[in-house]
Length: 129
Image (cartoon, rainbow, N blue to C red; front, side):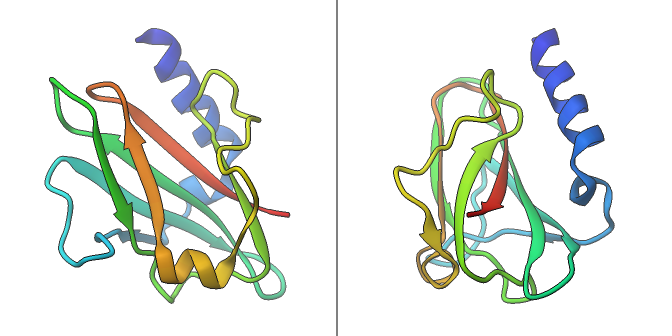
């Protein structure tokens, strides 16, 4: 558990958007909020057409995994292709999607998140490709 908190603090220190005031609580693609997953987008305005974006998810269940597909708000500026990395994983450089996804696809289909453990935390960094 201590190693996870070290990774969370390191990600927060190294990722400017996690310290910015911009935040948006993410709803599910089908509407409403997931009652057992804390979900928030944090972003920072960047030069050009893109924002730096990290999605924060916490499985609030103390006994099982969880999953959900979350909608990104239009107020976050995405363009081009993206890959995603979990900044608090053992290997924070590992790409999680099999192939980069287009910004339009991310807006239309959302971001699927799956937790295999209770109380699991994921900081999903959208990385422009």
